Length: 197
Ligand code: GDP
Image 1 (tube, helix red, strand yellow):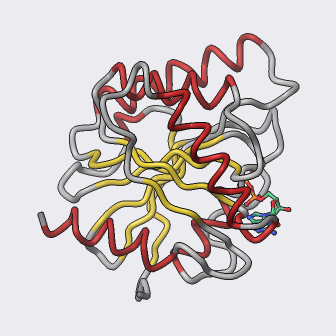
Image 2 (tube, rainbow, N blue to C red):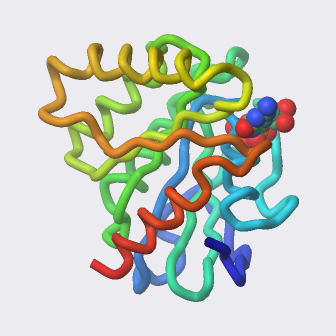
């Protein structure tokens, strides 16, 4: 699958300045360095649509991209930076929760998870926040090329086990590699399906 046209629309700190909510929207978020920019560029088939490795301390923005004039891809600022002030964390928190709670055309939140790491507190907290707000969620286990599929499956199993108590069903999930292109067709196919639903 290929995206034919990917167009940057706007960056905001206030979700209210987002484009008209007249197309389905998909948000991408994860811990800093999880490979979010690389994944977005892979999905879009572009080298530098999303800027890689945002420095902590840099303004954290909600970035809207229009894909094939059909749906919005939203690049949300990540969490879990080591050196972020309490104030910046609070700002991130209110910006993201306002966006997630109020963006009416939001169809699914893709949470990116490093496939090499056992469940991390920051990820679980964010996942449970999305769940508590009853927003549709899907997981993308990134950087899968860095280890065997067996190890990735073990990490996914650990997430299943951890979320079992609080989640009725394990959310849809994908395994990706920006290096090999793995997961691209699956994620784009999933989005297409939801767009057509
Ligand atoms: P972001 O901070 O979440 O946007 O992460 P980036 O996309 O900037 O990636 C962080 C680092 O991980 C960079 O050095 C990337 O080259 C590397 N990286 C990202 N995705 C992959 C992947 O799928 N495979 C490998 N091997 N490296 C990756």
